[in-house]
Length: 150
Image 1 (cartoon, rainbow, N blue to C red):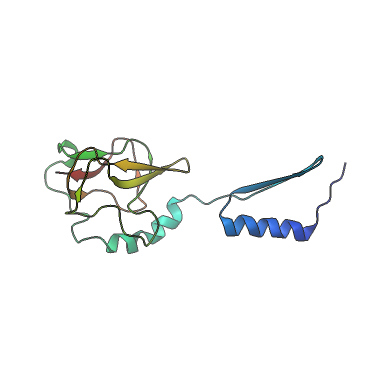
Image 2: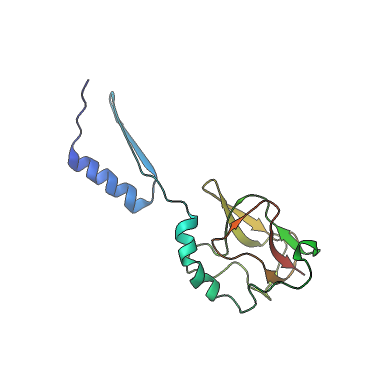
């Protein structure tokens, strides 16, 4: 059985995928079915290219880590999963938190993208953010130190 589709219709669907950011479209008409999909590049690649601009907008103390082991600090917030850290909702946007900022318990501190899902990392307690230990677009491991709230 040979199915032929209108090339212009295929072009329109492909353009729709690109302009909407969808990863696939499926169209069914009677017994005919068409599925168009695109391969998405890993999010870490484009974000890593944008990371210097995002990090540069942070206060000078962003990468400072105290001489004491931050993993032993009582206000340490650890990564609950493996993924990619995002300090803001989108490239160029203001970060969720900055060094010296006071946060309430439950406030969003950053995002970790894992398996194409963005997970909000919330403040376990109220306090002041004293250290941010990850950069925008950085890969993180399970239990990796993310930031410190005092």
